Image (tube, rainbow, N blue to C red):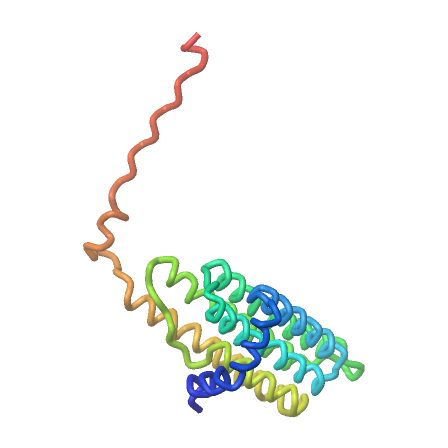
Length: 223
């Protein structure tokens, strides 16, 4: 599936809504916070076992991730602070969803679903490390846009599984657990291959011996 084409088509369809939000005086940050609050509500619904309604609310809250960025570009208010907060809110939103699912599968009247809990844990680890590898790559001056399974794909698959119910969600969690961890390793290998290794002249400055700190003066000797 062409997810890039899907996102472009979705952005074109929500353009009138973005224009309406701008005319109403909304800021990109207010939209981001609203989306985060909605996903928090979906997490509570999932904890209660209401997968269908919780899935609808989760997808609705996740859609705000497209609105805030487009609104910022429309208003000419794109900033590093906004991008930082938006990325962090995305992680919190996923955390609310997985927390709700964990609560549900751990407290079911018929007993905990061990496999579902294990797959949720693996998916959380894969999602976090996928984002972390990209963040660390940017921290050392590299870019990392590769990935078999990124956030848009995760949201669509999770939403589909929630709407269909637990019988579909558990197999999707199995797939997500494998795919997110594989994406994390894919990014790790990709970035490592671009960075200079031992013996590379680019690391010469890093291997220079650090000067010894000068001893602080003895206060008693100065008296």
